[in-house]
Image (cartoon, rainbow, N blue to C red; front, side):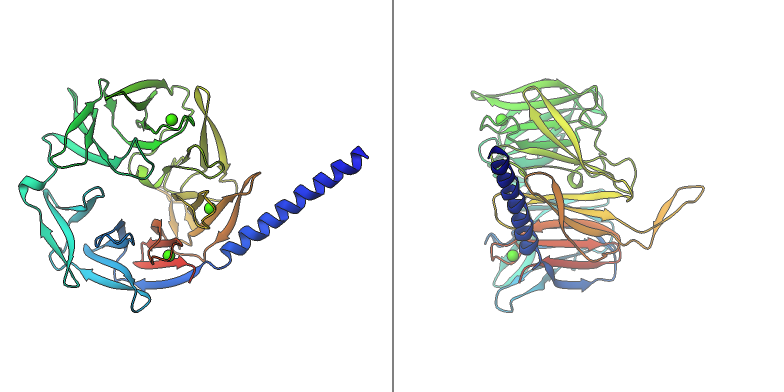
Length: 397
Ligand SMILES: [Ca+2]
Ligand SMILES: [Ca+2]
Ligand SMILES: [Ca+2]
């Protein structure tokens, strides 16, 4: 009798898993390319901005020979169109977007100028920002905006300022309201501030800020305490959180909720080289992060461009990640990859394990992936740029 019952339960859970997998695969079967464009030069940087404040994001594209343009959804035409192109900039520029106040910092060689990209009478234009409006703070460098109050909000921003040695920096927390107010400066110095993550990792319903300096033996856990902030040092000498490559931490480390809805997990790609690396997940357990490899590089080159987003609106994030594929050419100087055929995977937790449930066609040498709702229908799209200058958007129409 007991045996039969157990068998039934076994069969039932097996059926549930089959049903789940069927549902998951079915939900993602509708993902297809909805838009594509070939530019003359490689895509260098993609940035999501909501320039007209309607909660639908536009895509700011910086391409090889420093063309700066804006793509976005046209609701009348029902398609993605090119909305604006800057005639101002030709070469040598880099962009940085201050997402809390819509400021766009355009750096041309050594000269940095702040602009807002605004819409007036249906036309986009760049407007230089008056000096008095610029969130400048002598000797401080803007890092990112975030919140200790609510996930996804941006009511404070972080800056770093140099201490006695140029490699050591203090972290500052400021209010985003202009003129901004300095709320806190770390009492400790952080070597090469490289990775900062907001999240509720210990499930106490309060958001903390995690600072993981590159190649350091400590990490910092910062939380609000009364009207001040408290910074706790934590031991990372055993490197249970691996050193993150500091060149582009945005693409290799994210916090999100893939397996549980009530606390944040930490995901990171450990990259020893430019062939990508395996994907790890770190979950807070009582007094430390437990680290586990969830996508191994056995038999493949590696993963890059990590994104977390809820693609099927079930309240849990999926992992959107690129896998580097191509022909590895070994040379004496440095090996390189010829004929890149990188793909994108959507990876979903099925209650037991992480499973690849959708894989794109080969997309060349992927330079960046962004995930958000670009069309305003509540479903997220995947935007991909590559070194050949192709922009692809995948979604459900
Ligand atoms: Ca917490
Ligand atoms: Ca989901
Ligand atoms: Ca959409």
